[in-house]
Image 1 (cartoon, rainbow, N blue to C red):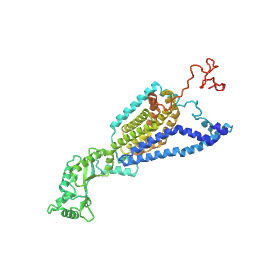
Image 2: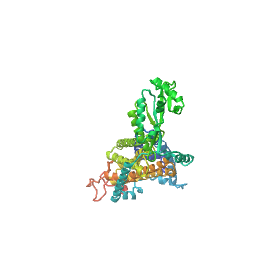
Image 3: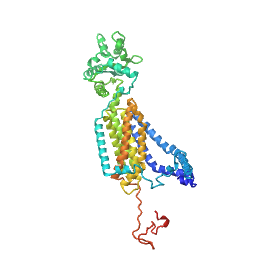
Length: 529
């Protein structure tokens, strides 16, 4: 290209032709991976967990924006930069010394132009070792071992979340630890039993049944329910009990104004005209054997709700404490993360089938994605971590990131026109191996500093993102070439093999003389070919 510019060709046309060749080579794989990532994140957004939903929508928007910028703005900037390089390359070929580095070297390295260029590391020594029989055996056994580790870890993953993980060293953490150490009994946990708007005169039997049955629960400190407004009012009004709903309201209002009931004023809320009780609260204590973890709180929360549904009809009951927000997340995070991951994997598989147009190739890439997700999910256990709203993000993001390297390589393999599957695997490694490797390693270096963070969120981000990226490189550059070489998805282009005729068909040919494609003698200026 630089030589053509030096010979008088239009630099704009030469640069544009070069960009067209680059986009024709890389554009389809960029499109495939971008669409699969976008669809995976959109599928992952169909969850009831708001944080994961917002995260997936944000990632889908980012992927789409990145694709549009890569195919428009970046191509335009690269075209202008290529014109500059070609002009400098032409000058260098004309004898002008380069100022800093040689532009003509890059300009003359296009594999579409210089087809006999030497193979790089991935298409040379790496491919020979990887696609040898011992190399393929090692890859298959290692991958099977990783999959088994992932499956074992996935079967042992437990859900847990603790807001203490978000506390960083400083005055707040010191104050928190001081309070927990001296003024909190970790064996008991306070919660509130709330009821809503109701006719409490008619609902007196239901209210009494709810309190009595709740006292009998093994995890409830029964004496903690003794001090409540409902029983205290019943004792106060025993000499002159109310006989109807209106009298009950008047009696409760009078009780709250009395010395015996003034301490319960904040526990009973009337409407504006004091014609109905719209909310009440009764304090209770849960007891624990050991620390009150989010999982233990979640289990007691679920059992309390079942009790309320059974005996608290008509009272609009609620069992609540602020920590329930974490317990509620633990309750749904396992189901929602697995559902979102499964939906994203199915979506990616369907999109790959449409875009790659080959069932075996789509199954191969889909299998790589499932393996990365399984191992990432199992790593939660091996990292001694828990499944929660933070680690659940990376189970979803693994679907998108895992498909990139494998889909890029598989597309290059399908486009190869080499005659054997092994040669196609080598050519795909030669063409895309460096790009896939540089893309993965540059991202690893980019997030490296987050590993020095002391906060739970960034430590989790670092651990799982590094895991996903390393697994993506492993399956994209190691497992995928071996799988393609063994299973050989159908090539899109048939190998063009020109056969010489068995006997000379043109007159005047001597035995052993080369024959042209047309059947006549080869011209002297083409004999070297």
